[in-house]
Length: 158
Image (cartoon, rainbow, N blue to C red; front, side, top):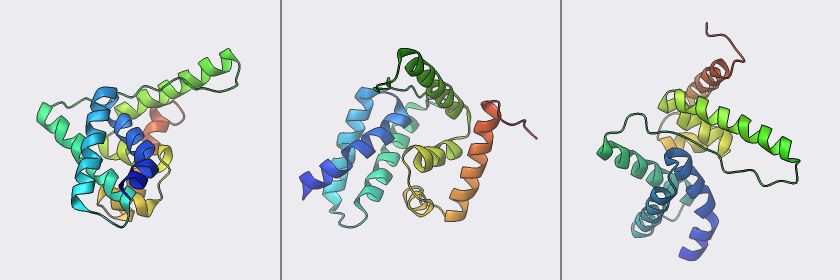
């Protein structure tokens, strides 16, 4: 059972922590602690939701202890595709621009955008992970996307 939970959720939890920290070593430490805490609480339902909540709290706690305000910096891993080198470079530049823009929006917007559009969770799942209402998730999603459009030059700030 533990092995199955680990194998089914490892990639998603790793990516989530990595998006929040952009530090491979810290990601592995927090990932290990996430599964450790999960196994000791013996959760049986909604395992991914609980794992994400645990991971989120561990990231928050880590940065609260460090008292770091502007810690969120995302960088993308190179895209491994069959595309031409120029296309790969262009795509990586677009991803880098998006991640730089994500770094500049409010934390609550950033978190919702990551969960909804990068991790592809539903509004309901996102509200469970963040422990907030679905209305708040929808509002923060809309505001976060608007802020990203402004930063990426697609819309003027009104």
